[in-house]
Amino acid sequence: MDWTRGHAIGHGSTATVSLATSLQSGDVFAVKSVELLQSEFLQREQQILSSITSPFIVSYKGCDITRENSKVMYNLFLEYMPSGTLSNAIQAHGGRLDEPSIRNYTRQILRGLEYIHLNGLVHCDIKSSNILVGLGGAKIADFGCAKRVEKEGPIAGTPMFMAPEVARGEEQGFASDIWALGCAIIEMASGSTPWHNVNDPVSIIYWVGYSGHLPDFPSCLSEQASDFLDKCLRRDPRERWTASQLLKHPFLVGERNSHVAKQIQESNSSSNSPTSILDQCFWSSLDESESLHNSVPVPPSSESPAGERIRGLSSLSGKPGWDWDESWTTIRGGSRDEGDTIMDCIEFKDDIVSCRKAMAVGRSC
Ligand code: 3AM
Image (cartoon, rainbow, N blue to C red; front, side, top):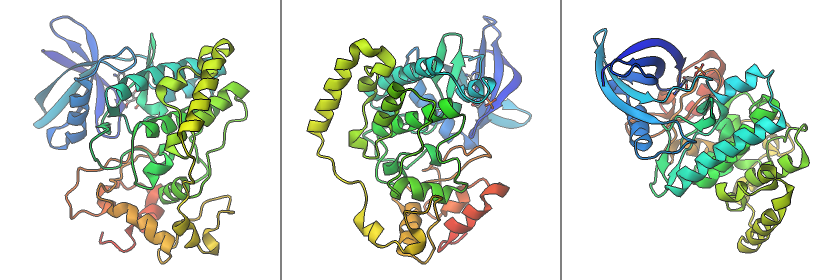
């Protein structure tokens, strides 16, 4: 397809997004572009998007390679979503959405999640800035971290949206997307990300993975909405509801179908033998300064056994790669050579210098 690039409409963590026009049809679309040499995530997104189609997923329209200003660019064509991200929509509504809007967006995101999960895919980076809004509602976008559930892969995502099992580097499956959806509901209801009072990523990962705590539930939510959130934010992934189950929750379908939810609840509690997700060895290794009773997480000391555990996250077989902007964007793993340190993957910004120091302990930088 011949096309011309228009103005830039956004900047993601891996690419710049511009408006584009097809020279043949005059159709307007969005083009996500990055230099070919750095296009691994965009190419991964292309592979996934080109294999799926749903009204709740941003549509794939093709890809090509161009030479522009002596740079070779990889371009991914997407349907144009004129209203920007859900994050933009939250800000435009004064920092929080009302419950009917939260319900509508949640239903649309869940339909997208149900579809990709049924197709064996995990998104791995659900958050309001990766949901695009158009005239017909919300669609899931940014599949740069997505993976097939059966494939062992590196941990990816955004610290404050990470499920406990992801933060601990154990697994990243369908249930991890459901936890992230719960975090996106907190964003819609409160205008803040979960754990927003914690200001460095090491503390967040530590806290999410090992504290046993849940994010604060926004007090403005109705009982039904809070119950829905509770089904998303179970620390044990086996206790979290699936996308299909959540689509039948009374918050989305209304009270008259609440008996379906009751059945789901009963079958969940009989099929799961609840086990503590807390790692006793870890807890027994905590010293006083790392006590659970701290209201603000304390990063583990580099010398402590808990510190060892956190540092261990960086040497998992699929070690995390770190990359975020000032609004805490995405950790992406897997693109680095074996010899790289975790720190090589961080885009340094003033506010994460403390993280740089903390994560660099014991590793060459
Ligand atoms: O940089 P901001 O947040 O303003 O809205 C998306 C976001 O804008 C925009 O690109 C930025 C990074 O994701 N964007 C991404 N895909 C888009 C699409 N298909 C898009 N805008 C319109 N249509």
